[in-house]
Image (tube, rainbow over all chains, first blue to last red; front, side, top):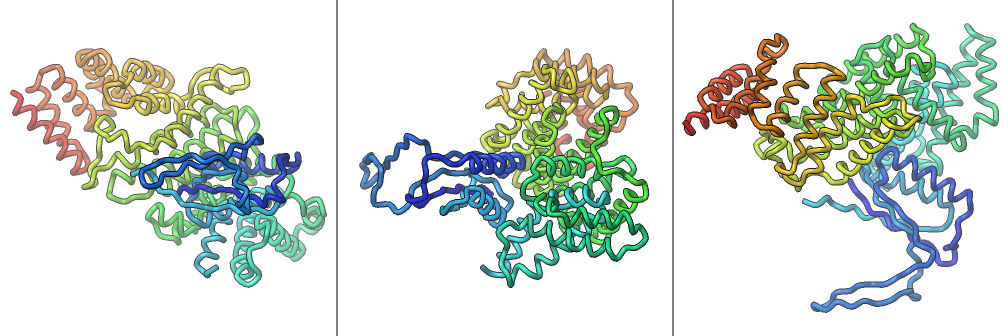
Length: 115
Length: 426
């Protein structure tokens, strides 16, 4: 089963630079997950962050620039997971949040393969 | 969180953590069998305690601590090897050992690799290698292994108990073999993983039984091994071969369960992610073959088979297949491991690349091969080449002969259809 995990951070907690220890911890976990095939791809928010939304409404497409000041959380990154089941996706995500070590939420969405 | 969810959670944690747990305990106790029992006991404690206390923050470390505590108790009770036990108990309870699981990552990796070598040790049978590898390294339960191989749970349990006894009686050390033995011992690990893979893969086309989980388990074991032995080209070769073969799982069987030949498959159904992973692994194997760190100077048999599979994976339509390259790769494979079945495959590729007569020249040389006398694919391939050469009468005879040799009804039906098509063209 494949899952998209969207990591969101508390804006107060979203430091642009992680500590070397955090980077090392995350790097190791990412390596372990890749090695087992549990992680297809992952990435963090880029520092010169670009945020925009593309919306289609009543046949018209509009592009709106961010940042979105009203939101209570900022996107910190994403991961595309390949897990045996829901429980395994959750287990990896918990380890990921532990490695990150700050207040954050991962939104897990199961995605079905193209038919 | 419902009870079902919690059991799924614990099972997932077990799959992820148990190889490291068993490997770490094996190093400390120098006894894989005992390590596995202790890990199992720790798992049972988790099943009893976590529903009340909640899943601990670091479940791997929790399991390790629980297992070590039991180990110390057992060792203290065991007075036959008193002095050694005291030393072991001391080592296990020292503060350094407590932090093992959280910090010593490289050591844990080495332990998992040692565990793979022990699980595939030549003192045991191939069946035992498969069962132990799945149990110790794959994190499968005895019941899961039994279900996957369609055998009784007691049979698997007994096989594992016997295997563990054999290991302990032979005093197999918990170590990676020295360089002189390593190639042969590694071959046995690769063979075990490929056996697991084929057990799952072959079943998907054979008898209507779908066992894709074994394919996933084999892929995971292969990927783990590749991360642990990054300079072994054949490990990447095996991973590449399995990923690319697995990419065709959804397209190799038709709606009625009939096998669909490679060239007739709907290529849009091939799994692009697995193909990508396979091609990347193959690239690693190819780079290692000409790199000073690599352990072999040319592609090994798994990497060559992967390279052949990759030729098909790269072609977006059957007519784009690079048959000349496939023929050359079969040639290299035949030189590495001379084998009439490889030769027959080479004939097919040569026939596709240079015309049916070139293929027939090779096949005709195989007709006296005694090991192929009862093999339906020899007359089947010959029939196909004759058909393409316009010699339909001879082709029909070959297809009929092939049908009489086919072992399952689906192949037989397929070959008889081909034979009757020869008649209608005449």
